[in-house]
Image (cartoon, rainbow, N blue to C red; front, side, top):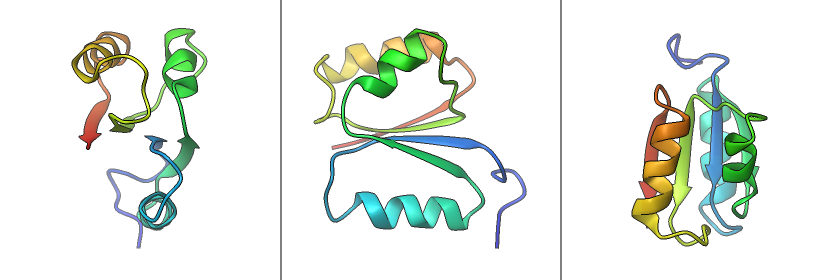
Length: 88
């Protein structure tokens, strides 16, 4: 069942194709989140351009060209209210 505080919120998954991505996206959808998946820096670029404003960002540090700490700081600046979850 959807969780009331997550229902309808947008989760951006910046994770590569693999055994984790599909189940993670399914589970987040099951919890009531809208899920968008990106395999590269495209999601970060869209955030920077103001075209995408996710409530939650799950970031695999292996998919971003920028150093992990740098991209995390950039996301924090661009999305101060978003939850940022970093994966390795």
